[in-house]
Length: 255
Image (cartoon, rainbow, N blue to C red):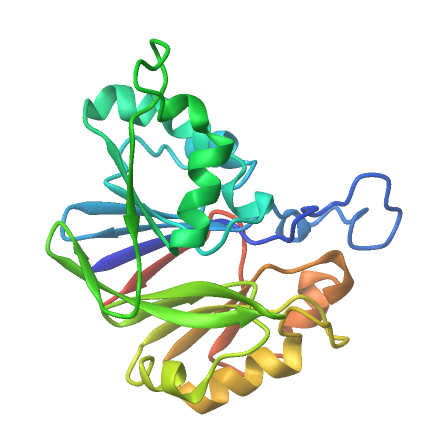
């Protein structure tokens, strides 16, 4: 049994957006409140974090996360990478380097932005980060096979990940057919859907539902949702029976 926790389901600004007076940002429904997008996967005793956005500390505390064996990074934008330093307490408990996986371009950003962790004589108390470049082939974390899925965020190459019957894709605006084929047979899909109106660098609702229709998972959950999507209670009624708006803290069991 795999357990997936959606740590955050919002866009780079989160929801509510600072200063916004729209109906979603002013909603009293807790399902309309969204931290920046991230997920936590537990499978066969291995604990995998997908992305480390600026809300990571809050997300780990709220979801009682005390173990992380590896971090899968989708891309280098700060709403997906800006909280990496908050992994330090896990590193102190683990007493071993934190394994980080991503495209070489993204790992170069990690090395630049968190340069203090890579100095020959690092300052006491900084985390040890071990960078693992991801290419085309599957790789393993503690014997768990992970298939990278190469997608595009406008023109920026980024990664989604398939772990057994589960796949996670965020910030995509295009998935090549070769990569869609790598997702055949999944049972649960988490995929980004920014809003109802089309967007230049993210799937909108109709496009995300088109991917769901193509792949036919048993269940699909939408993430990276902006306040422009609309209120949870209203949008949920528009969705197919096997598609759900993601909610922060939602736990999904995948058999």
